[in-house]
Image 1 (tube, one colour):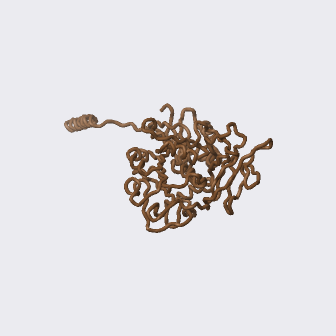
Image 2 (cartoon, helix red, strand yellow; image 1 turned 90 degrees about the vertical axis):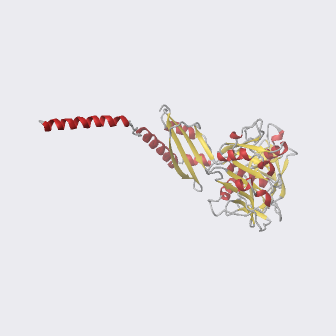
Image 3 (cartoon, rainbow, N blue to C red; image 1 turned 90 degrees about the horizontal axis):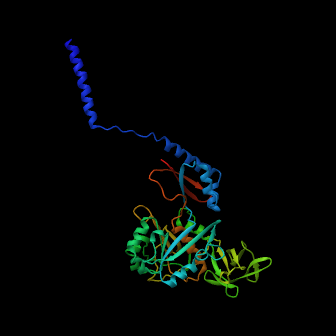
Length: 424
């Protein structure tokens, strides 16, 4: 009997002890994660379908129309989504120019077509086509009183001294992934400090050549390869509003092209011959120039023009100026244009501590050189960050993310799809 009582006492004591210990612990219920798993499978399936059917490739090569509508139809109405394609530029790129009024107007002219505001049509030059996609380069003059730098994608400087005066804003701008372009000549003392941090330039004792070419195009991983690809895909504009003729430049040589229209259509006139859109002319041997758009029958006379594009990635440029004390910037794997052992145009990337930000330094040049202006436009597409976002840009706190690397046959792109429940 005593043994039974002691056993009962021991059981009661254990129960009391367990009850006491439970006071110090709280129970945690962990969600199964099943809803998120279902959402992730839907996202993975969607990317697989869009890749295998070629719909994403079509978007990259041609235009964006229909892709967002296609995604909306693929997902339940109770879900939201945002898709980012890394490797292609936005449709609208905002460029902030830290410059004088004269430089501001000059930059807009250098980047035509694509910059006339507020119009965004092809005729006025408010936009241009990149592989079928309409691209706008909206340029604004940066003024501390009326310009929000958080809206900009690219910051442009013509004056080295102005760059050093904006260091605080520039660092914040780069931290969030902004791009910097400096079009300026440099001496050895100029590349210290902020220039060394942002552009990663090194002075060289070597000499340059008489020509500048795209650096090492055999390696697709080089930034020069990507920019050369943009170069042959973007146009420059020749204003023909005066006497129906205008000038463009090849290797520093000036050529004249005209515009004309009658009841049969619009024509470009070069070397006494008539050409239509998409025809190719050869101002010099080995230099094919495509007639992208002819604006001869225009609503306003000042819009009369022809858009041209040099379509040879092996094209060489007149060397952007260097001498014994100026622009002797060493060449490396981030060089875009090389002149002998020197860089005429050089890029930098992964600038911030989080691997964000891009920058390009360009030796100053004659702003009337249309071939170099075509290069500048290609640079703007790259330095803007090359991240195109479709869908809701305001993300909730909880979402799932899946990614897929795709190819269009020559380039690789990362497609990231974010999804979430609207009422979770």
